[in-house]
Length: 613
Image (cartoon, rainbow, N blue to C red; front, side):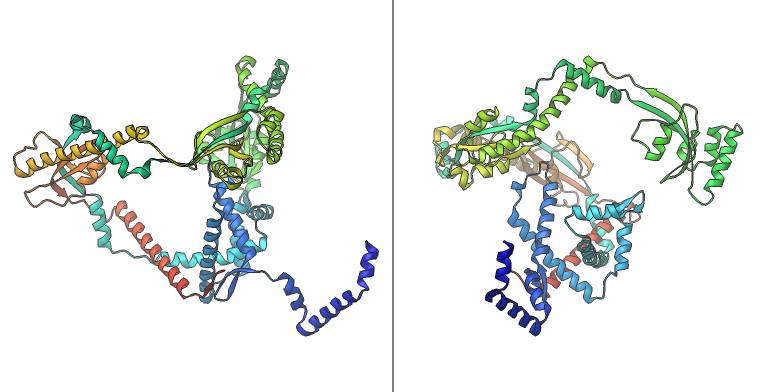
C-alpha cells in the first residue's frame, strides 16, 4: 500500500494536481484553497448575512430535544420534523433581523460584559461561586461549544434589551383600566326559571322516516374508517419481573443488605452560626472560651447566632437524618457523641459550632412485613438487566423476520392480537401515535414488514405487523340506527326545551306570568357559585334594562333551559388606589407593550431583504 502511494506520487497526474495548487496559491492566495473546503453552505440570507446550515441543524437538534423533554412519554416518532425545521428557520431569520437592528443602534456586548454575565448566572455556580467545569458541562449538554454559547449570548442579550425597552413603554389610559375594572366588578339583580330535559321527554318521539332521512342526508358520517387487524408482541419490564423466581435465601440476603437503610438514624443538633468575616476567628474563640467556662450553649446561641429562628430555641435544629445538611455540617454532626460540641465548621452559610443533643434510631420492619416489597425490588433489579438484553435481541430478530411467531418463540414471548385499529388508534398499546403511524406506513401496511420496536411507555416496548387490512365501508342503516335515534332525540329535547322557554318568556313579556316564585339573585357577580355557566353567561350578556323596566332572555343547554328576567345592573366599584387596579393597569400596559414590540418586529422583517431556499 505504501509503495503504491509513493509510486502514484511520482506520476504525471500527481504532478499536474500539484501544479494547479501552486497556480491557485499564486493567483488567489491560501484562502482560495482553504475556503473551497471550509466554506459553509447557508439555509437563508438576511440583508446579506448568511444563516449557516451548521447553525440551522444545531438549532433544529436543540429544539427537537426541547420538545421531547416536554412530552410525558418522550417519543422521537411523534415529532413533526418538517414543522420543527420551518419553525427554527423562521426563528433564526427573526433573530438575525433583530440582531442587525441592535448592531445598527450601537448595542453590543464586549467580551468582558459576557464574562460578567456568565459568572453571575446561577446555573453555572456551586455554593454561590462560578464553577468553570459546571459551565462547560452545561454548555456541552446544550449541544454547543463555549464560543457558540458566548456568541449566542452576545446576540440574544442585546435583542432582549430592546424588547424589554419597547415592552416597558406600553401605556394604557387610566380611564380604560377603570372602565374594564368596573365591568369586571359589575353585579346584577335577576330572576331565573328553569325547565329540565326530563320535564319535556314525553313530548319527544322519533319516527322511522326521520331516522331514514337523517341517514340519507348524512351518509358520510356513517362511513367506517379503514382498519387493520394487528399481531403484536409486548416486551414489558413488569412482566419480566413477575416471571423471575426469587429464592427465600436471596430474599433474606437482600433484607440483610437493606436492613441498615430501614433502620434510619436521626440526630438532633443545635448550632451557633456566625458570619465568616475577618472577625470570625476572634468571635468563635470567645464563644468557645465561654463554653469552657461553663456557660450554656443555648444562651450563647441566643446571644451570638445569626440564625435568628433557631437562636430563639437555643440553637435547636430538631431531628434530621443524613442528606439534609451541608456536607461539612453533616460530617461533623455524625462524628459527635451525645452532648459533645464540634470544632468550628465552615459552610456557605457561615461558621458553625455544632452540639449533638440526642440520637434516635428507628427499628427496621420485620422480614415478613417487607417480603413482598423486597421480592418486587429484587425481581425488577434482575429483570432490568434481562430487559435491555431481550429488547436488543427482539429488535434484531423482528427486523428481518417475515412474521412475529419466530421471534416470539425464540425469546419466550407471546404474540397477541388487536382488531379494528384505525389511523386514530385503538385500545392499548395502539393508543400510541408513533406505533399507529408505523402500522399504517407503506412498508408495514403494503410491503408486509414488521414495525420497528417502539417504546410505548416506561420499560414497555411493542413491535407489530398487519394481519388483515379492511377498506373503508359504508355502514348499513340497521348498524347505526340507535346512534341516529340518540342524535335526533337530543335535538328534539333541545327544541322542546327552547319551545317551553319561549312560552314562559312570552308570558313574562305580556305581563300574564308572575315571576314571584322564581329563583331570585340580588347583587350577583360573575362568579355565581350555584348557577350553571350557560345561565351566568346569558345574564351578563343581556343589555341593561331601562329605569323601572326589565330585560328578558333565554338560554338553552342539552339538559336544561332557563328564562332570565334581568331587573338591574349595578356598576362595579373602582378603587384606583387598590392593588387590584394597580395589577390590572400593569397587565394591560404589558399587553400594549408586547403588541408594540410585535409590530416593531414585523416592521423590521418587512424592511429586510430575506432570501430563503
